[in-house]
Length: 257
Image (cartoon, rainbow, N blue to C red; front, side, top):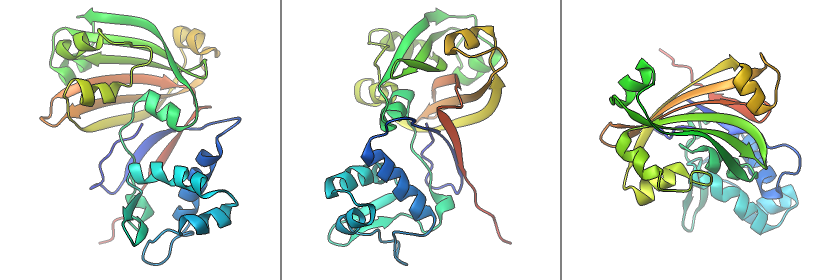
């Protein structure tokens, strides 16, 4: 769940930490990511080792390597050049950033089965000033869901949408919906970027009960506003996550005068 802003030189992303039995290609993908950040697996031009070389390096098949690299290309860490190889987009790790992904995409990318339980949905005018100012609507459509990974509750998401978008979403399966794909493929909404704030929070009685933790347990909290190409706010999302399943990954760069 990160923001695709490749022209910027820093990024913050919330990534799923998969536990237990992790598919091999995901383990290799994260090993490639980590080792490249340490300056390994690439030459001075930023060219990544070939699939055959990586297969020998990790002791796995080429198909496993291919499945591991594909998501890294999709997210912009690498670019493929036909006849030349796969190249790091920047030799400065602090310039790498992620892509804007919803919960279902992020969870599936980490090897879990994503799920949801709807807690609340529908039109409302009982929302705070921040929602009203961001969406510029007196009444909004809201969707509050308990989010699951392999049937385990790990997050609570409360999203707000302009009425025209919300009423379209209401026609769809809100348990398995991949929100941003629906935006782009079905509603014709082009997502430009998003602004995300990440902070720490403590579980209140309601969130503790839903997530199966004690009141006062630490949670990871995010607020994200997603914008269309015309600058319109398409979604305001507030969510809390169990930190056991998520980590905050930040890349920073130091400016030199």
